[in-house]
Image 1 (tube, rainbow, N blue to C red):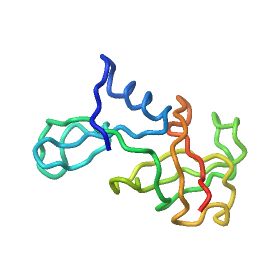
Image 2: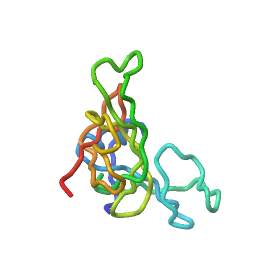
Image 3: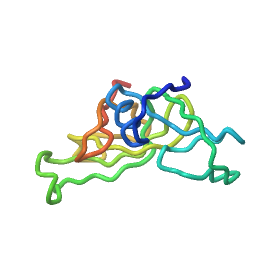
Length: 132
């Protein structure tokens, strides 16, 4: 975890910048230290709206996923993919992202280690499987 000093950018731009370097930018409640994704405006524990931003490495383990073996309109650039929910190794926060090349549950057992490798305007967080 590291505290973040950021330039004048929107929260979304900051999140994307960090994701492109393999990190996840998170809001930490100043009042109770609860961790939330940067899309949240109020702490779900104490309802404070005061946060500091911290970053974590974007590595974690698969918690659940949905496989799209027939890509919907707009996703023709991939044959199949999984929308993955994973738990960050460093802080236990659940995050979701796009993992191309997954066509069956055998391709992605629960607990598979993964990491954030990029951000795509079309697909959001882009993930990659790590060797177990």
